[in-house]
Every structure is written in structure tokens, then in C-alpha cells.
Picture 1 (cartoon, one colour):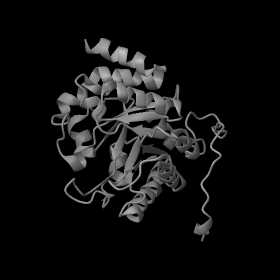
Picture 2: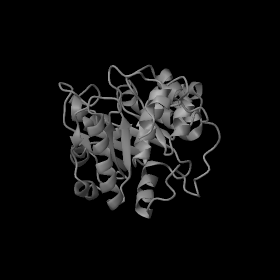
Picture 3: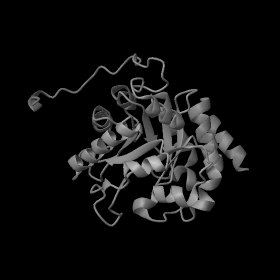
Length: 290
């Protein structure tokens, strides 16, 4: 076992990744053809970036604001997203089979907001994921949480099943109320997830040192949109994250809780795929809103 008395914090995070070997996503060139094909339905092969639309919140929150009626709030936004992150229930009941988007299927669940959220189990079988033609499977990972080992075991079990079926796994790093949201914690959580087999990782942006998080993680990182903030602030965070090495964003509340969701999603696309600055993207948002 490693000597924990001499656990030294890393310092060398600079320089470009040198192991792409022609594939458009970091760390995935050695994967099977089917797994890479599915990743290409989530990340645009033209630039290796993604704008994911997250509306899986109901699996533990119920009909939260903006998601009361998925048919009214989400369906009009589908054409602008690269990928949809949702539950199998929402997929089967609401999303047309000819939508043409990569489906990132929520595969963990169990407790509601009334219980300890880290006590999740795997809630989707690999057979059902194949039936649903999932492009990826999302599982919550609670590094430092009460059920850390259990959640990591959920992820590794899903990775094993996904590798056998050619389906990549997205590890979603969850932060408890008592955890520090800083670069050191996210370097730990994202690296553990990647080392144990996740094909890409969803985590939070931090102002100080986020580039070390993306640099130290050998697979692509997508940032979570997080709680609802003003549109210009959400666009600023998305811009900073992309500039500092993120491969995309997975926005939910900052899109479907906006007064103008379609305009906001277009502005986010402008940041991620077209290199718009926050000011340019906000101008686009205001133009489309009117």
C-alpha cells in the first residue's frame, strides 16, 4: 500500500496531451470501434466538443421548476443539443425515436431528495441500455461521501458491462454539502473516475486551477451547469471552462429555467462550438430573446 505519510500534491500539469492518435477525444483512441462511434454521437467529431442538455433531475427531485411538462419545455430544445442526458422513463415517454441525438442515459438512482443522496444503486440494466440505443451511461460518483466505495463500485460494474456492450460510461462527480469545491478535490474525483474506467467525466468548474483538473484527467471533462444563475454568468463560466480545457458543457437549469431557453441554448452553442466570448454570446442571447 502507498505510504500516505508522503502523499505529495502534484505540480506538473502543463503541456498538451500527446496520445490522441487521430481520434477526436482525449484518451479514447484505444477503445473499440463501437464505443468510439457512440462517443461520436455525444461529442461533435468536427471539434471534439459537446453541448449536452440535462433534464434527468426528476429521478430524484420530481417535477422541478422548468421540468413540469417535458413535452412543452424540453422537446422544442432537442434540435439545438448535441446530446440529451435523461432517464429511460423520459426517453420512452417523451423523446421521439427519430430525434437524432446521442442519448446519455441516467443509469444510477434510488434515493430521493428526502433521503441520503449518495446511497444510489445501479438502476438500469445493460440490456435495456442496448435496447434504448444509449450513446453513453451516466452514473453518480460520490468521492469523499458517506457511500464513496459503493458509488465507485457502481461505476466500475457499469464500466465492465459497458465495455462488453461497447457503451461508454460518464462518471458524474457529486459534491456533498460538507465537501470543499476546489481544484484539488476535483482533481482527485475526476482522476479516480478516469483511472477506474470512465470514458468521460462530468464535474464542476472552479475559478482557481480548473486547468489543472482538465490536464490531470486523461479523459474528456464536461462541466455541469449547476444551479440557476444569470445568463451572462452562466455563459462566462462555460467560456472559461472551454478555454481551460473542458470538452463541453452539460446544462440543465441554466437552460430550461431561463426565461428564454432556446435563446440560451443557442448562446451556449456559440460559446462551445463557435468560440464566442461571453459578451458575444450574451448579445446573441438578447437578440434571439427579442
